[in-house]
Structures are given as C-alpha cells and as structure tokens.
Amino acid sequence: MLERGKVSIVVPLYKVEKYIHRCTDSIRNQTYTNLEIILVNDGSPDECGNIAEEYRKKDSRIKVCHKENGGLSDARNYGMREVTGEYTMFVDSDDWIASDMVQSFIKAMTEMEADLVQGAFYYAYDDKLFVDERFFKQNAEPVILNKMNAMKELVINEKVKNFAWGKLYKTSLIQNIPFKKGVLFEDVFWAHQVMHRVEKLVLLHQPFYYYYQRPDSIVAAYTPKNLDIMEGLKERHRFLESYFPEFLNESYKLMLKTCLIHYQLLWRNKGKNAMHCQKIKTYIRQNHSYFKNAVEQDKEWSRQLTLFSLHPSLQIAYLGIRKGLRALRVLPKPEGLHAVKVNPGKEAAVK
Image 1 (tube, helix red, strand yellow):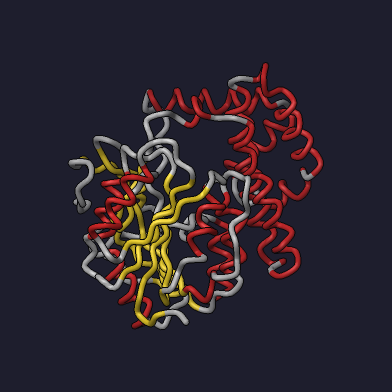
Image 2: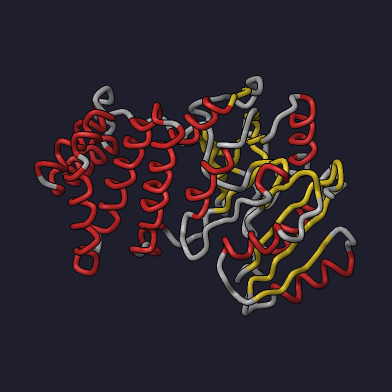
C-alpha cells in the first residue's frame, strides 16, 4: 500500500562522490518534508556507498540500497522496488533541486488533479546557468495537457521533455514500467510508455531542477554508443504507428534531426566511425521520402536534408559557413538559451 502524500525520490549513485553532498542536501532541505529518499549505490568504486550510509544515520527518511553495478536504468529499477510513496521523483546524483520543488509540484499535482507534473530546468555549469525561455516565460500560467497533446509534445521534444528527471509522477502510473537496461538515453525508451497512461499533465514554467553539465564536452566524450538514442526513437516510432499514427510526421522530423546531429559528431572522427556514418547515410536514404514529407514546411531542415542527400560534406560545410556568418554577425544568432550568472550550488532566479 502506497503512503498517501509521501514523495519517494530515487537517486542512483555511481562515481559521484564529488557531487553527492550537493544533490542529497538539496533533497533533504525541501520545504515539503514527507519524503522518502532512496539512495541506490550502483556498485560505485569510490566513497558513494559510505557517504550514503552516513546520510542514512542522520536522516530517518533516507534508505540506502547497495547493488552490483548495472547502469543507470538498473539502479532506477532497483530503487523503484523500494518506493512506498504515493508520488515518485527521479533526481540524477550530479544534479540538484530547488528547495521548493517538491512543494510546488505537489501543489500543482493535487490542485489540478494531474498524473504528472513537469517543471522547467537550468542547464547548470560551474560559473553560470542557462534557461530556455523560447516557449514559455517563467511567470506564465501553468499549461494543462491531455493525453493526446502530451504525447504530441513529447514527440516534438520541446515543451515536454523525454527526461525522467524534473517531473513528479503518480507512483501507480510508472510502477510497472521498467527502464530498459544496457542502453544510453534510457529515458527515450521509457517516456512514451508513461505518457500513454497520462490523462492530465501539468507544465510549470519556473526552473526548479539544476541539470549539471560536466566539463567534458559531448564531442570529447562521444562514442558510437550514443547512437542508442536512435534505437530509442525507432522503438518509439513503432509504438506511435500502433497507437498515435497522427504524430508520425513529428517523429520522422525528430529522427532526421537526430541522425544529422549524430552524423556530424561521428564525422569528426570518421576514421574510427566510418561504419556508423554509413549506417546513418543508408537509413536516411531508405526513409528519404518520409523525411522529406516531414520537413516540407520547415525550410531550414528541408535544406539540410537536400544537401545531405547530395553529399553529407555539403551539409556539414553549410553548417560551418552558417556558424561563421553568425560569428561575424552577418546572420542573427538563433534563439536559444538565456545565460544567468550565479554562485554555483545555490538557487538562482532569472532576472
């Protein structure tokens, strides 16, 4: 029996001894105190397990689980088996949350009778934060989405994000939907299954979650394993074919964007990644008519698809030229993230 009003927060731990205090303290210091904090030591070789045990001794709300290393999905699944709260939240252990996040989410969840609440978030660096205000301003009223609109926005991946974190779920909604093990971008394999059960989703526009950006860049850390995201999108596309065929064009559009982005990242080290580059080229060629139809009304992505189809180097050259022209201010910079300088580790308000 799930305990009414309790929020269970699952935090997987692996090689994060540098960040674990910031994360755990931000959860312990929530203004909403009816919490169950589940720290899952995923076989971490550093001091994470010992630090977690020290927290357990000083806070009765904390549970600590120790397991062999199995990856983020496995750790989340393990933690979910320990959940006793009516609501569940996921926090990644190198991130942290605002002190009023749970209180604000519970208020929205109960007042609007929602199944899921999502808030905005910061991209948190060591010396500044970035917030995305392209779609909603912080002082905007909450947005309520029904199942169809929530699924559509998830597929578009602009207003509703695929991330498991940054949301509050009714535990009953997700209890028997495990994360897929052994993959990167596990949330992409998971989120659409959850959204299929949602009757009402509430979007809050104030940033509550601090999504920490580690110093190593995506280019430096990139491996072909990152292509798991494409497998997740393909799996979701097959799901949409069965249940939401009206969103297939949006799905094709996102898959094309993802293919082109990952081709670029692979191309930077093409000698090692030639096989994977070829797979992407083949996939785009095989689905060209679907992609063309999906981006027909989007001049920018239609142009990139045309150039890539003629030769991938043309599309890459186009992006380089466009970047240079923007640096020279010949072209305007695209709308994007708004930077906010803050003292890292402390809550900040965008001004």
